[in-house]
Image 1 (cartoon, rainbow, N blue to C red):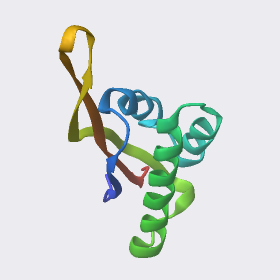
Image 2: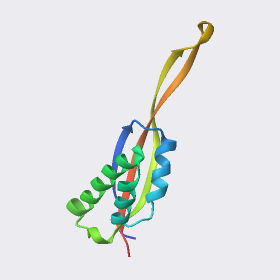
Image 3: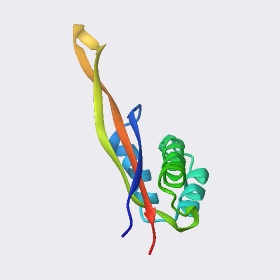
Image 4: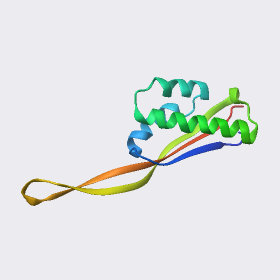
Length: 113
């Protein structure tokens, strides 16, 4: 297998669980098919992954001289980033924790064949 070229988006304001669903949808697809899947999806993570995927494609073409037509998504994942911890007032003078989770989105592309 040829070299993998990747792009990252760190501290994206979406939980890793929600972002991981879209990563599973595009993993293993050709890049043109993956962009089409992301463009038709209404999810927020699709917009984020579309930007990261286009960046990975541009990195492969400009920095490594790979053929864009032969590229496929070899890796797509969402790792846990920082978690903001906040508190909300609740009944009878109590407090509840709220967690604002963030993700690190990674997309790797490589040439098929």
